[in-house]
Length: 261
Image (cartoon, rainbow, N blue to C red; front, side, top):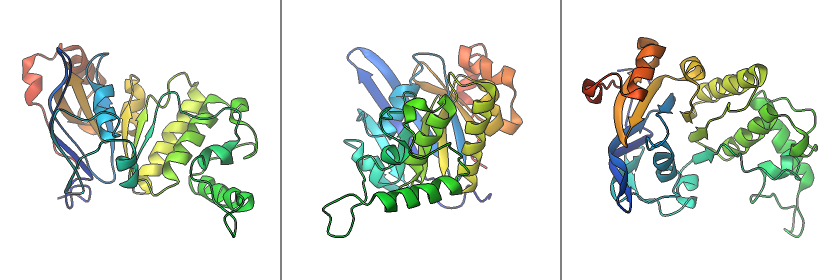
């Protein structure tokens, strides 16, 4: 048994179903993430990726199925539940406040108070933010520069640093390299690798298969609300993955599944 497979999975979803009226978004999805690993969640538009990550992040409640965190059943009825258990989500729009600087964005809603609790501890937040960014090897021109003036890759790094600043065990990243240039995409991918080395697991939703192959340990493909393949990245090819995404692999794809490790 590999180190990844030791003990129960960090996250396990079993038989997850979700419908919106007559439209079935997820049809009995099984999905798991071990610690630490990077799992890429792929699929064409309408495959169910967004619904699945919203269920994991507590935004949507499934109609049926079970969710466990480190072997313990949980039921999320809002985003606070996953956050308390170490699950953070970095959405494609990053949800940063452009007129705030890096420190203010990292501590948004979690500000440190000075002794007495009557004012904010700006020096303490600055010191801790600098330590955290240094640990992640994130280099920014200034922590006091408003994020509206940062590059796309730098803003992505700020959003990721905010997600990891509170003991995160699992981070969901929605299209982390979308609209980024080659150099900035490389920086974000290297940050993902460093997070895995720091024992943080990551779910990456991406349409960029090249990037998926660079950072992921496993690839899960959804099609029409069902998982049609779970593949070890090092044992598959770009062409095979694309066939599963498009449905060209045929019905036998539904049986294709591998364990973590």
